[in-house]
Image (cartoon, rainbow, N blue to C red):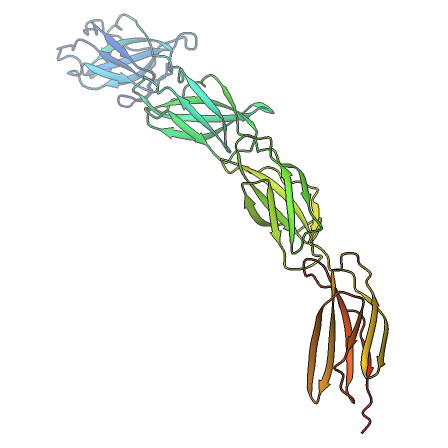
Length: 403
């Protein structure tokens, strides 16, 4: 063996030692083992002939000869700790005394010691499923007082052997970890390792599975009206998901894009108030559960529109008879309940406008024409909701001034 100088704790090897049979040997060696260390106690040798002690070690099955691993350079010492050992490993030790000239005593009787094995991981672990975008992991705190932390590892069902460390939970008495920001309706696999104060990490615990809460199912049967004045009425069937608490309505003027949030409601109907006649919108509705999870939005929208304006009347006759304007027109729409005749004329630089309302027939006589003034007439249809059609094409009538 090759000799290396140094102090206690360093790996020292030696050549075949020079033995002095008269040097007193080491006796009464006692040991106390831990995971990575072995403590020694021996009976101090009260001899002026010795300078200190050598400690030799052998790892059975791996090494053929003992090698010096420490020199305790004080004959009054009676304790030493050999560190940086392997957990659960058997070692053989012998000790000797040495003098100033470098001679050693006969080695002590061999002492067999086994370091303590790495403890098992936690004995109980559970993954709680059906939580929104998260999995709650709980375990029983480890009884070993040397535990400093828990290491959480995760895999997915598609790659069950591809484990990833996702967290370290400090403190032996910790018993919970919340894995957040997960995918909806996804199955995850978890296991726990234990980290000891000396940095040793145990094997994994039993693996457990959990699925995150799936998104609620969307409502079905969405219907939008096209015949309501100044509003679009929406109805749908409730979501089959039991814990849905409200619905969100989205609207766009285009069928394929630009949908924006319009409203939320806890009912299965919604009235979209639109102050424009014949306005078309496209709608989509989603369901939201008690945890705020929102169902997927449908790719296919439903079209709705407010009630359109009545069809515009067509003026068929416009003439002046006995200084009176006579107008006749065709209705063009069965919805029409009455008509409005709009008359415009100029008085100097001022444009005057007058409406004649609640006309029930399809003709009209204006008895208030003034000679020398040109009048323009248009006709609008009015339905039962008071919605007016676009005005008809204008007609112009004129009474000549005889003066």
